[in-house]
Amino acid sequence: MLARLTRIGSVFPRLCYRIPVRCVSQSKSSGAASATAVTELQQAAPSDSHGEVSPYVKNPEYHGFSSDPVVDQWNMRLAFFFGISVCLVIGGTFIHYLPDHGMRQWARREAERVILQREKEGLPLIGENYYDPSKIILPNGGEK
Image 1 (cartoon, helix red, strand yellow):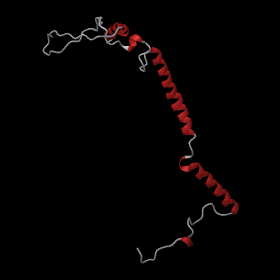
Image 2 (cartoon, rainbow, N blue to C red):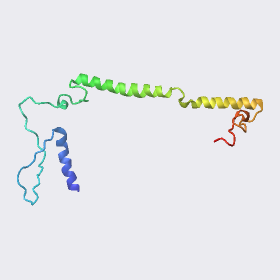
Image 3 (cartoon, helix red, strand yellow):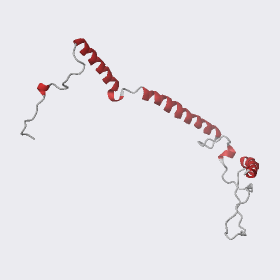
Image 4 (cartoon, helix red, strand yellow):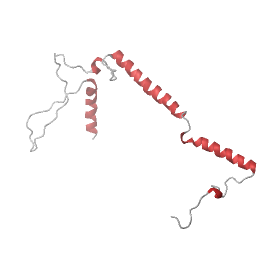
């Protein structure tokens, strides 16, 4: 196991500095199963054609917003400013100062006001009848 880690340690710096290219051997294998063998990573041959160039080669600090380095950096700064400052800070402040949802605070204040009023008048806090019994209309025994 330790021998494998030392081999990875010698390959890792090469992977960081060069763009890896995978070379596949097309030779016939000696075993019964004909599997394709993957050889060591090698550098790609430089081509003289004007193909597509990676944005990381032109701009090592590429953020993915634009191919121009200056525009890319400003777009990244604006995106993070508006994404963090505006959305999180101003949005969180807006949500915090929204009016009372479900009027829970109002209901508590109103209950406290009613309790103080009933205590001053000497009435019980909660009456035995929620509704006034004289105003309730009950159906006759024969009606369904």
